[in-house]
Each structure stands twice: as C-alpha cells, then as structure tokens.
Amino acid sequence: TKIMVAVIPEKPKSSLKYIDSEKTNISKDSIVEEPIVTAAVITKDDPNLPCLTFRFWVMSTFFTSLGAAISQFYYFRPNIGYFSIFFVVLVSNFIGKWMAIVLPTRKFRIWRWEFSFNPGPFNVKEHVCITVAASTGGVSAYATDIIAIQELFYHQTINFVTGFLLLMSTQILGYGLAGFLRKYLVRPANMIWPSNLVFASMFNTLHGNVSETRDRIRFFSVAFSFMFVWQFVPQYMFTWLTSMALLCLIAPYDRLINRLGSGYHGVGILNFTLDWNAIGQVGPLFTP
Image (cartoon, rainbow, N blue to C red):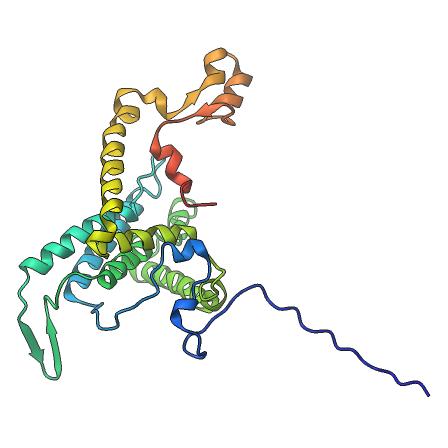
C-alpha cells in the first residue's frame, strides 16, 4: 500500500511589519524599527498635554481659512501661488507662545464643563493639530472643476446648497477612503512617509530640550536667513538664474534647439536653476 502525504506549504510572511501596541505586549519603544524614522520621531508621549484648546481652535480656523482662500484664488490661474505648510508651522509657533503669555489663565465653568483660554504653555500636540488642520483643510477642492465646467461649457448654474453638498461629499469621501487605508498605509512600521519625517524633526526641534536642540535651531536660523536674502536675486535682480538654458544660449534662434533646451517651453536638457522655487517644488531634500 502507498501512503499519500499531503504537504501544505507555509504562507509567505508579509514584509509589512504591522505592530499594534494595544493588542500586544511589545513596548512602544520597539514600534519604530527603521533608522531614518528613529532619528526623526520620538516614541515617548505625555498623555496629559491638552490638544483641543482655545489656541488650537483660533489658529486652526484662521490658517485653514487663509490657506483655502489662497489656494482657491490661484486654482484657475497660470501663476500658481502655494500656501506653504512650513509657514504655518513657524508662524503658529510664535503666535502660540505669545498667546500662552497674554491669555488669562482663569478657568470658566459651564454646567459640568470646565475650560480655560490658557491651559498652560504652548505644547507640541497643539502645534501638530494646528498643522494637520491647515494642511488638510487649507487647500482647494478638486470638485470645483465640476462647478466651473458646468457653468463655462454647459451654461448650467449650480446653486449654493448643491455646490456646498457636492464639495462636502467629495471631501468626506476622501477622508473615508483614508480611514480604510490607514491600517495598510499608516500603521505598518515599514510604511515610511519621508515628507512627514521633516515635520516630525521640526516639531521635535521647536519643542525639545533647548540644550539638545540648540545646534539645530542655529543651523535653521542661518539657512533661513541665507535663503531669504538669496531669494531676491533670482526673483528680481537676476531672473536668468531661474532657468539657465545653455542650449538656448548656443543657438538662440534654432527652434529645435530651443525646444530641447528650454525649461519653460521644452524638454529642459542642460537646463539649470539656482531658484529654490523651481528646485523645491518636488521636495528633493526628503523625497527619495
């Protein structure tokens, strides 16, 4: 007699390292395993820090409204104006510390709810929540294309209520999809988002121990001052530095050479720039 033995192959293990600290006994310090993440992200947390404070609601509403207005104003224009989140991070830090000094610390009570305009020093959680609100809400909605196309090409006017519900439904649909994909794109330790590491490092520098972050703040101050002064050179003094097309200099009247060498109207071969607005559009310092 022959004995048949069935061999069941093992399931391949996924390369994603999903760690749920609430359901496992693994310490929180071991959740982050990538060296690049460990260098920028702090795994320690203080649950007593307030988040949704009066300062958060005021600054998040202001920066979200400002960003949405600027983004929508430049949405249909050829010269696009960007609402930088780094601007929100830096300005909200100064405003938050100023509000922590001038706002009263008195506590108010409404029925069983107690609150204060100034619960304490401006902390990193407030700062992060303000930045998240401004980065998610302070942008233009893609659904405005639908309203604009219907009015311009089909001569169909959409009333305010219909347009508002259209914008809200498309935006909420995007947030819902983000919630579904959070388990696969956010929670795994191997899912690294390089652009967010920049903000994490900046928050740690602004709210960390002064003795430990002194060198970082000094480097940031020097780099910021140099870039602020230099930006006037390619923008106003010597605009050729924005797009240095070497092929166009060799044959300025040759149409084929111009199409190959022009950075604005061509392929951009041997085209160089010293303008940070052109260099930093895709985030070359943190995007791999």
